[in-house]
Length: 133
Image 1 (tube, one colour):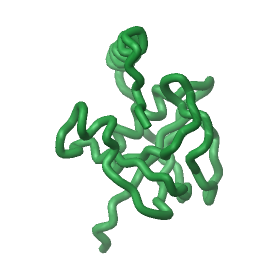
Image 2 (cartoon, rainbow, N blue to C red):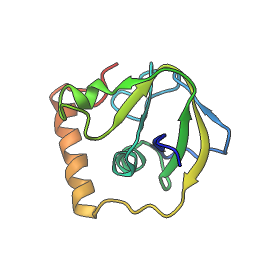
Image 3 (cartoon, one colour):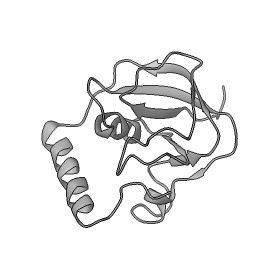
C-alpha cells in the first residue's frame, strides 16, 4: 500500500491518457490569459468545481494526473480563502501527465453551482480575478 495521494484536474477539454497538461495555454478562468501554472487538487470536490466552472461547451472531465515536477500550494485558495490548504489545491509550472479519468463523478447541486457562478461574476464585476498568477 502506498501513501501517495491521487491528484485530479478538472476541465472541459477532452484528453487522452498520457497527454501532458502544460502551462502556456489560455486559462479556463478570468480573462483567459496564458496560464503560467497548471492547477490540480488531491480532492475530488475541488476537481469537480474545476470541471464545472471551466469555460467551454460540453460536459466536464476529471482526470487523474501525476505531477512531472515540483509543485506548491495554490495561493489563490490557501492564502486568500482557506488557510492551511484544506482543499489540497496545488499549482505547478511543470506538466501534469494524465493517467486516467474519473468517469462516475457527481456534480454539485444546480443551485450550489449557480451560486458559485454568481459569486464569480460579482468578483469579475469588481475587477477581481479568480486566478492570479
